[in-house]
Image (cartoon, rainbow, N blue to C red; front, side, top):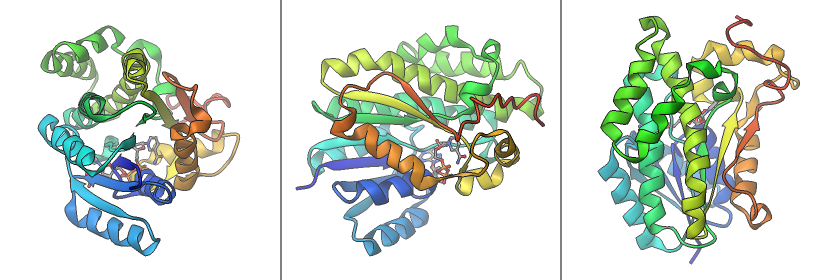
Length: 273
Ligand SMILES: NC(=O)c1ccc[n+]([C@@H]2O[C@H](COP(=O)([O-])OP(=O)(O)OC[C@H]3O[C@@H](n4cnc5c(N)ncnc54)[C@H](OP(=O)(O)O)[C@@H]3O)[C@@H](O)[C@H]2O)c1
């Protein structure tokens, strides 16, 4: 039996590219909300010789994630969970984005903590936007409610988003939720470590996927990068493959920025418009 790897958001983009690489040594479970999209991805994976199946799951829905975790455990030892599901600013209204990205992260970590074993790894996908958005905007003091009361947590996160004009709210929900993803991975590391599970977050810059086609900021940032092109989904997939491998066995509780040197070159989305 191959070890199992679960990839949320595995129906497209970075998640699907990761499934192709990790599928060489793992049994892959891809998930998302859209069944036909998942079926098409499974056909693509199978034609590449990857053993894979789909599980329809909305990461914002706790019971749906718990069912997926239980199913994954029934398939064998879970070696890795890649949480690539995410909504960007043009994909929905602010609260939906917050729920998919922030609540989704909480649901995935909690459900899979219960079923993962020593030597496994969780990779949470954040974003370069978490690094370039002014820190003063981030409601860091509210993040702790993610561990006590999810309703209060979402209410407080949205209260910060709603301080800003309507037209900025989806963008801000994205940046704040992705900043939270990094915080949550970092502050979950000790608890995960007690079970011998590692956890890292990865922050992509502008990567050529269906998501970045919708976001004009992605294309605009390229000219400020040290490497003046979009990143390829495979480049992120290779980093994720390293993160879950034995080669990264002493790496946990950190964020890895993979942005073609955009942050290093001083890109500022407020200034460089
Ligand atoms: N591409 C970039 O430039 C870039 C930059 C920074 C960060 N990222 C992050 O990288 C991750 C992957 O994005 P991508 O670029 O590969 O875009 P993508 O192709 O749009 O992939 C995102 C996937 O997430 C799934 N998804 C969205 N909401 C979901 C939910 N509530 N529950 C379950 N699945 C959900 C979507 O599938 P369904 O529609 O079937 O649900 C989709 O397959 C995201 O977290 C994104 O924020 C991307």
